[in-house]
Amino acid sequence: MNNILGEPVSHPYRTHEIRVRTLRKTRNSVTTILEELLTDRGASWNTIAIVSNLSVSTAKRLRTGGKIGLKGHTNLAKFASLLDMLEENGFQVNPVAWMETNLPLLESGYNIRPLDLYFEGHDIVLVDLAAYPQTVFQTLDRVRPGWRKSRSMFETFVDGDGYLSLRMRND
Image (cartoon, rainbow, N blue to C red; front, side):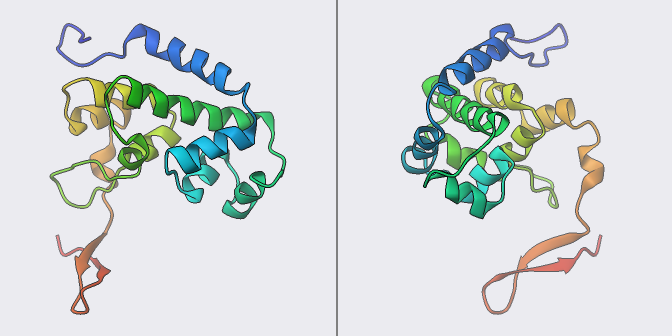
């Protein structure tokens, strides 16, 4: 769905759909949601920790009966719901891998993942990015208007030993 300028606009029902899906998922135990994210989807402990606003070690304890608040439980359910939406609508075959991969930006110096946008609260924008024929630049201009000014002063390069290293930019 596009506005009169031809820019993509979120489908009005996507926000409602993710809320309903999240509510349904919160009926599952935290252990069940974790099992889905870790085993079925292949999410990392780091991703789960960030999504649930916990440290990695605390997140790992959830699997063995550790406690989490309602907000953390809801955050896990919402993340699992978003992954379901991306996969069920045919937008992504492996949504966790897509979420953790840098977006294809032609300009160097920008490392932005869909997961970063999710953490900023742009979950529906991610569904739009996967669903509509729009560029990553259009999406970032919409949700992070000054994103081009936030370029890192460092760059990665393959060092003499064959491993990636960091160095200051020359430009």
